[in-house]
Image (cartoon, rainbow, N blue to C red):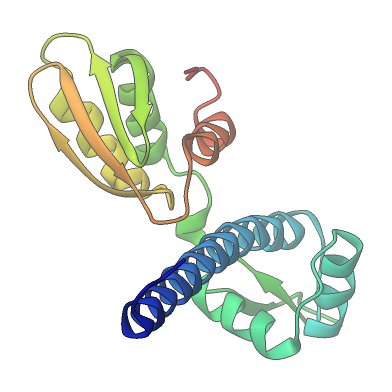
Length: 187
């Protein structure tokens, strides 16, 4: 098949290297998506339960299908800025920061997004959001303030927003996030 042994060796090294890079990229994308989902579950568990220890939270996560170590959970809690607050009589329990709850200003940003978006289309990690004329800047600003974890960055014109999804995120991830925070938004 190969007439020159040096060419064959170089060719095989390149193929192995490219396969290695592709596997690493696929693993990182899966890891990012899994972490995003796990963080969302941790937030929901803390919002809906009185959790007093990491062991209790680890057990709840296992029931949800996430098998993580205490060290990983500790990093997740730090990333989410989870703290412990006193219940006044029997001890402490985990609580999300106040700014994690929907504030009045966040509600107004959600209203801006609801009012302005007409359509969303994707090509890979790039999204084009069509808005009502003159609404792109306010919708873009609202998306930035809402700090959706799927969005890396945005750029607005008059009636169009260009957005870039984070590595490993898909349009389905973003639309799921919209469904959670802004239920009226559809693709």
